[in-house]
Length: 275
Length: 286
Image (tube, rainbow over all chains, first blue to last red; front, side):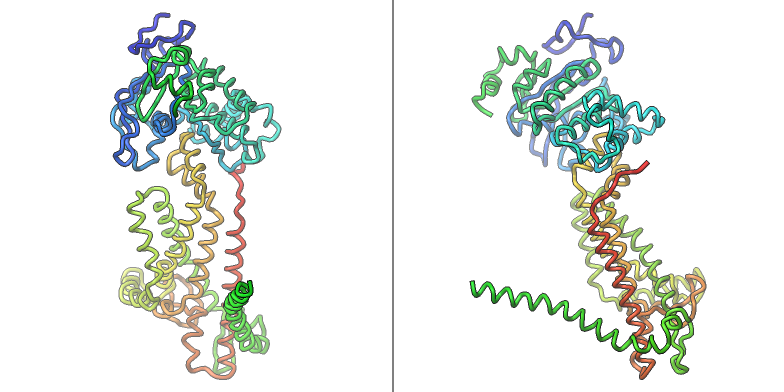
């Protein structure tokens, strides 16, 4: 399938795209000249990049490089911060996120976020899972039950919790809580999955389970993964973007970025010389 | 080391003197009030509406009912506005506006109660008389005045309770597609439930105990109120109004009224403490 793409980077040839789903050649998310400011101070400078369907994009970069802010912009979680302002555009399937017609709660169901720290609500596992579908208000109880199970299975958590769905989510271990948060987002069947250092506090086994889930899930979603762990970026992504001081320094195929980075800064960062 | 011990003992004495005050008041009221309750009989004292001190009839039922009516009205108003205020302040209001609104609500607590009563008599009572009928001096007037008076208590405790709900609950809920209102309703209010109940009960305690403002707007007739437009006398007003000219059994009966009031407020405060300590809460059951 031919891919007409405006970016300089082509998708891997084995990448399958759902024709017609988002228009031929149209990226899932297109970021155009995006600037972000906290209290007027720029934290993101002129970011332009495309995120395609069915790819895993890793975003790496040193602390306070704007990675998290960029990620939170993708489903307007930045709205929660009154000091934040922006310019430029972010298009989801061609529609600007700040367009008058954009339904923001729906946007957050379509672009699901998982935070660095697990944020289970203080209810049972089942109620945590069912909260999103119930809010959407368009599903029958039987459908919700199915969505809960699907979500938990997709996050590799089902077998561990299927017998105690009614127990408090806060009784789960950290790794399980994080997978619950992933499952909770997956239950909503989003189009894009964005993860902010989802494994920063996790043990290697939980990390492995989450990476495995992402590998399988990319068949259905676009995945954007912010990580401080460059090894994880190398392992669990198709393309990698390097952010530094609020600027996008480089974006390219993960293999290429990690072996022949175009920028000196990228090279220094991934080899551990700064950051 | 020695000095430490000395300071420790001194502080201990200071701390206990507060408790001593409470103890002395309790003992005094009970000593003065209990004998007359025994003489009249608990049942006749609490459940008779016949208050004729000259004939030796001391039944305070109408005042208990009056107090409960007025308090219920006050807490309804206080809770609707106080909780509404707290929700707006914590969830929907830019921080700059919060720094104006919150102190001004707290300032309400500093206004002397006689001023509230004065405003009630001058403005509220004529309005009720002209537009709703009755004498104006009524349960409704007292409830509104007291409702405004308990606002600072209810608001500031509710704000604290809502702010104590972890930020991650809020973010987590928004992130799965909840609107701010849905988040407030399903996550924040549930999380703050125990604190809000405490605010409710402390507000009630304050409303039950208020005297001056109520005397000015309640009408103070000793009779069972038939509607919210009827005048009432509350337990507190009864004590304040009659203490100056009472003697003998009459005087003792007023102390006994204080005993009943004391017990009501103690019960309310104990419930408030008990509820606010229960921080555990469960999810939406289905």
